[in-house]
Length: 104
Image (cartoon, rainbow, N blue to C red; front, side, top):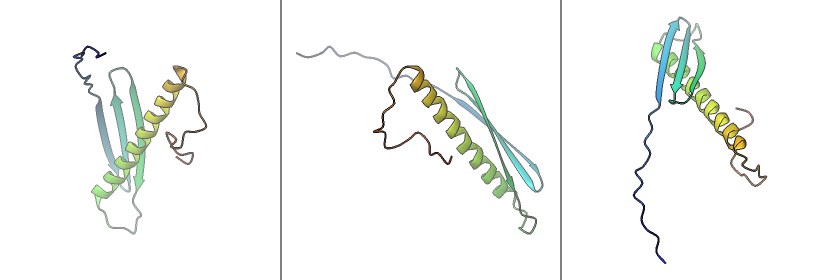
């Protein structure tokens, strides 16, 4: 028996991410705000230039932003884990790829 075809349009969502960088030599700070429409998440990270290294601001920007993005990814994975548990999904010992590593 064939099933009738349903023409369901794909869901499209837009999340807004703002990344703010501030420099106070030798420190660079990154702040990320992610607005999903339903929730707002925030993460922070820093980079510090060694006083003996040359002053190259974009390196501090890249390090601080990259660290803040990694922190945001961890927050999202932990939020997903909480949501999975909240809907009653069973924990299994067979999960070979955890949502995040313990050291993160």
